[in-house]
Image 1 (cartoon, one colour):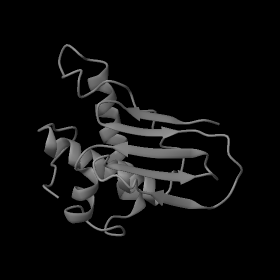
Image 2 (image 1 turned 180 degrees about the vertical axis):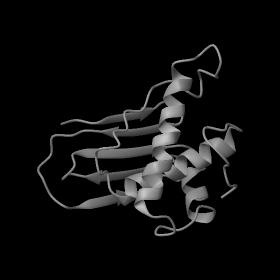
Image 3 (image 1 turned 90 degrees about the vertical axis):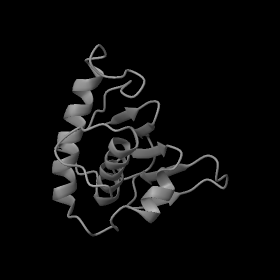
Image 4 (image 1 turned 120 degrees about the vertical axis):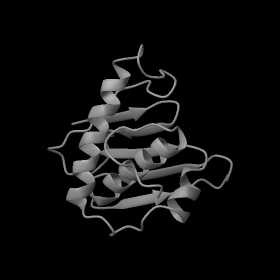
Length: 143
């Protein structure tokens, strides 16, 4: 089954692929620092996460709480709220900037995407809210 989670303008994509099954999760960074891209592949669940956002990788390394700070269930709960509000804004271009909210995110709370995917989505949402002065849900820390 293919799962698609995309955000254009500030691109966050989880795209299904038809690769062979394995438990390998790999993280790759491009060699070009100007192309601030983070990519995660988990062939067992058949998805990729690609985040292309200038400054996000630096912010993730320098400002975000480290991996393990939050539980996976905490990240999943927050991501459900963030994605719900994100999708509401995509569907209301007359109320929200359509250049920020271009495409809906298909985030299925019944799928276990794993810690790393939820960590990156959560931190991207925090980064996005702080960078673009948006409030998707609740209080947003400056971290």
